[in-house]
Amino acid sequence: WTGTGIINGSLGTFDPSIGQGNYTLTYTYTDPVTNCINTDTKVITVHPLPTLNLGANNIVCIDNGAFNMSGYSPQGGIWSGTGITNVNAGTFDPSIGQGNYTLTYTYTDANTCTNSISIDVEVYALPELSILDLEAQYCLEDASANLTGNPSGGTFSSSSSGISGNQFIPSIAGLGVHEISYTYSDANGCENVITESTEVTSMPELVVSNVVNPTCNGSD
Image 1 (spheres, rainbow, N blue to C red):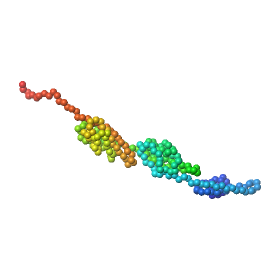
Image 2: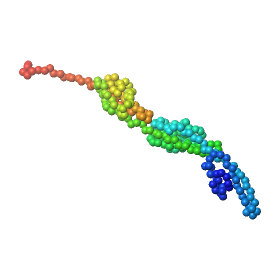
Image 3: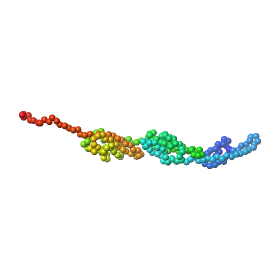
């Protein structure tokens, strides 16, 4: 065998890495008895690999819910990797847990040429929250209580009235059990909410009975 791309003439080994294009290869044979020589040719077409595009890496929160990968081309390939629940739609489920996941998209074109490309998906955990300085019980007549959310920068809310900024006001909340929530979004855009309960009670009623009129010693 001879021709551009042939790397072993005896075996007829052709290396497609020579590049895209049409290559004419010649096969020459000599008859060992008659010493007659004949040749034939064959054209090999080397196609390029399909060009794939996956767009930018994805950043999601662990509570995002399953979603389909988007922004990739051409369509019609197969997705693989940890977290992929539908290989055709490219469905990724962040509930698999916090971490970095490398997903691979494989596509085969009409020339049966196959190419693959990878993309990273970063799954972030929700921020851990706490409410400081919230007592389990308040009296209706108690002064406003200053609440602290950790991390700072979030907002307080209540299932009823009684919250003003970061203050809980028992007299406005009124008697009963109240749900106090603190909502916070971190730098990754992941939002979490923590809710705790407090109860507003009334002051106990005091009754003084059996009052005895004072007397002095020696009085009749």
